Amino acid sequence: MISFYYCERCGRICRNDVNKGSCDCCGSEAYHLVPEKYWDEGEIFMREEQKELLWEELVKTSPVFDEDLFNRRDDIITSQVNSWIEASNRVDAFVEGRDKGNRFGIECPYCHATNVRKVSLAGRAMSAGIFGLGSKKIGKQWHCNKCGSDF
Image (cartoon, rainbow, N blue to C red; front, side):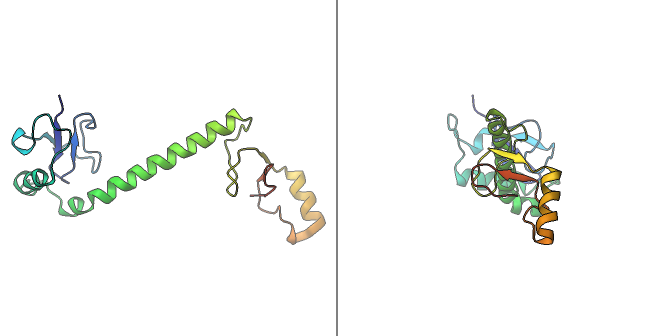
């Protein structure tokens, strides 16, 4: 059975399969079961008018209500989701690189290939010795074997 929970500090509303005992937006422990009068049994989402009523009657009257968090909660959740996606992409690139023999898990920022190698200190020193400060390898640690770029 689906239940909904709300945070009386920031107004975040989640289903019970998302709730971990504290608010995923502000971290507050002030998470409560949404009374059935604010949602229709059997529904997997709350209607906007139901949310508005819950916020007006229960959240905004709470002694721990934080209006700033309430106004920013969607931006906070979006930022968290974007961070999770970026972390997942980094893990995927690392795993993909390892699967293709790239023990470093690095990908080329230009062509996104994982077929890269570490530029050796000797290679950088030799390039700097030949080209001086005009060397393309100064400050570069990686070489892409697909597009030939150093980064």
